[in-house]
Image 1 (spheres, rainbow, N blue to C red):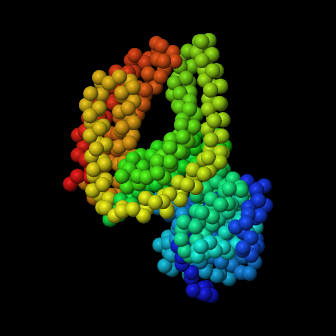
Image 2 (image 1 turned 135 degrees about the horizontal axis):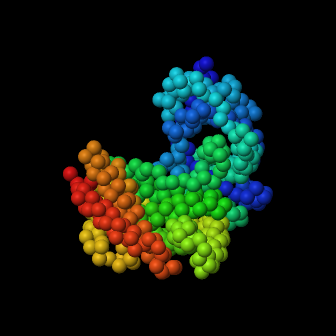
Image 3 (image 1 turned 135 degrees about the vertical axis):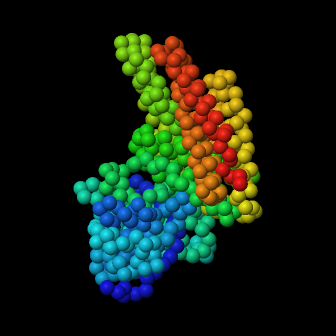
Length: 494
């Protein structure tokens, strides 16, 4: 079937903000909405994919929406590391709730439509919500504000939708963030990055609030330093925001991944310190340190319980003193999670996310000179980090436990930088050296981490069985990993 009208292709630029269902009336009464005339619709959308989610795995979503006036087919790309606030979108009217695959020509869907995929496409889940839409103008900038309330449903599973979407139609992107901040003064709004499609697939996977690990960063050698930093910062922000619901729900894996995202972002700020220097950076750096510290005790106690206390309890099941220590740590563990979840639910954290997003996209640093080639910058930073690891690694066995822990931190920073700049130095030889280096750094971190666990066990319960035998073996493993790392030529050098 041929499309009735030409397909519409656009780059969608939007902010998604989540709110508590009971706060909808307060948003609707905000003065910013008084100038616009609301248009209300109740669209029903069906999302299509194969039973094994071939489109989703390729980062493409296919949707057909019943608008009340007809049907609209939409093809979207999933947000990647450089697409936190924008993504490609292709729309066209269709005749029914069934997709019209003739309209996929020239879209991200077209390369995926093998005969097998075409035959296997089925409805996977749907959304049903009430949408109130306002067309707003702010200082010459046109913004569409949509308030969605409803649910996404997959089989018998459902998840509520309570979102504000701000889409830039034309004008200055800064006004998008200004409007979000204005709305956040009257209603607690939390920056969100997961689309309705992503939330539907989460339900299919067995639930929501799943932890999200870091995705690959694609910094090509043709980028400038400014483009490289923004790519890293968007990637890290995505990881932080995507894990926010899980942390609020008290999930340890989400808390761990949020902390990883925070550490990665702070590492990125250090790598580009000269480029992004200024009062805004200093303020955000302080706020990132604050939330990292708020999450720290919960994560530290997660690790301590799993890696230290549980092995000790297994080794000494009848030890009354150890049982008392474990009970005390459990109380501390619960208190640490109350602190962590409270921080992530706070107005301060919500403000941090909005401020951070705005700074990444339209901060003062972006107006400064950031046009230097990324390859020169990456070479200098990677070389410096490598020298710092080698300096301590050469005398690894002689280091005190606290110094070994600092070496582990240095190795971790070099790993982050290596992962950030993986695509900056292409070529099979460089890729092979990079992978060898990353493997050695990971083994070094693991061995040093276990040595740190031993040091912690000794503080809690001196003379823990088996530690005296393990320590020399772990030191040997750490030295072998370091030797492998030092032997590999730097992947950024010809």
